Length: 456
Image 1 (cartoon, helix red, strand yellow):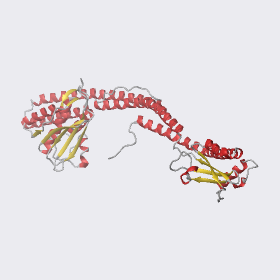
Image 2: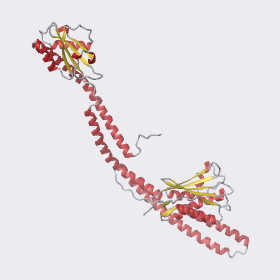
Image 3: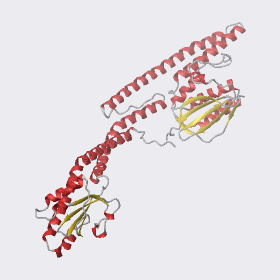
C-alpha cells in the first residue's frame, strides 16, 4: 500500500513548509542554546559542589562533636547526603578533573584546617554502590554522583555526596515556544494560502466548466497577489477572445451551410430535366454524397455548444437509439442498465452514440451496447466483432477525414468525420473517447461522460 506523506494541495503544502521551517529554526536555536550554556551550567554545578562541601566541612569543624550529626542532617537534601566516616579515608589515584576539584576545595578551606592536602574526590560514582548511610534520598536508575572526602580531624572524615541532575529531555520552554510558533505561523500560512489558492481554485473551476460547457467560461475574480491577479486577468482576456472566435466560427459555418444547401437544392431540381437516366442517377448520387459530406463537416466543426443542456437519462436515450436501429434491421444488441441521470445535450449525445454504433455495424458486423457507471462518470461502451484497429492508429482515427481501410470508400460509407464528431461531443461534455482491441477479437469504444449534477 502506497502512503502519501507529502500533501497534494498548495494550501497544505504551504502550511507544511512553514511549520517545518519553524521546527528547524527552533531546533537550531535549541542546539545553539545548549552548546553555549552547557559550559556555564557545568561551571555553576561545580562551584555549587565545592562551596557547599566547604561550608559543611567548616561548620562541622567549628561545632561540638555532639552537634555534627544535626549539622549533617540539616544540610542534607534530596540531592545532597552528608555523612561521617570514622578514621582516615585511604588515598586513591584521581583523574585530572578530580584533582582539580580537590585542589579547589583545599584552597577554599580555612588555613588552620588539619590535613588539608588529604582531600579526595571521586568524580563519577553510582550512589547505589555506596553504603546506605551515604546514599541520598533521591535514587533512580542511571544516577551519576560526585563524592568528596574532607578530613575534619585526625579521626573523622566528612563524606559529601552530590547527585548530579539527570537530563530531562528537551527543554520544556523551547518545546512550548516551538508549539506556539507553529500554531501562529500555521494560522498566518492558512490566511496566505487562502488568499493565494482561492483565486487559483476559481481559475481551475472556470477552466473545467468551460471544458464541460463547450467554451462558455465564467469570468474569474481578478484578486489575490499580483502574480495570481495577472494570471486571472490573462485568463479572462483569453476566454473572451476564444468565446468571440467560437461565436464567429458558428456564424460563419451557419452561413456556409446555408450557402451550400441552396445550390445543392437547385441542382437537384435541375436534375429532373436530365433525360439520360444513367447520367441522372450518377449525378444524384454525387449530390447525395456532397450533401452528406457538407452536413458531416458542419457537425464536426461545430462540435458542441449549439444545444442547451437539460436533464436526461442517458440509459433511456441509448436504449431508445438501439431500439430504433434494431427495428431498421441493424444487428444492435442493448444490454439493459439502471437509470443514468445526467445534465447534457441529448441530441449531441445521441448523434455521437449513433456514430459509434453505425461504425461497429459497418466494420465489425454487429454492435453490443451497454452503460457502466462509477462514482465519477458514466461510460457508454460499444463493442463489435470486427478486425479491430492497430494500436498505432487508435488515436489517428479521430483526426478529420482519416479512413484506415481502403474498403471504406464512399459507397461503403464513411467520410472520416464520424469519430472526429464523437471526440468533439465527448470533450465538449468534459469527457473522453477511447478505443481498445478486445483480447478475443473486435473493437471496444468507450465514451466517458462525467457525472455532472442534475440541474434543479
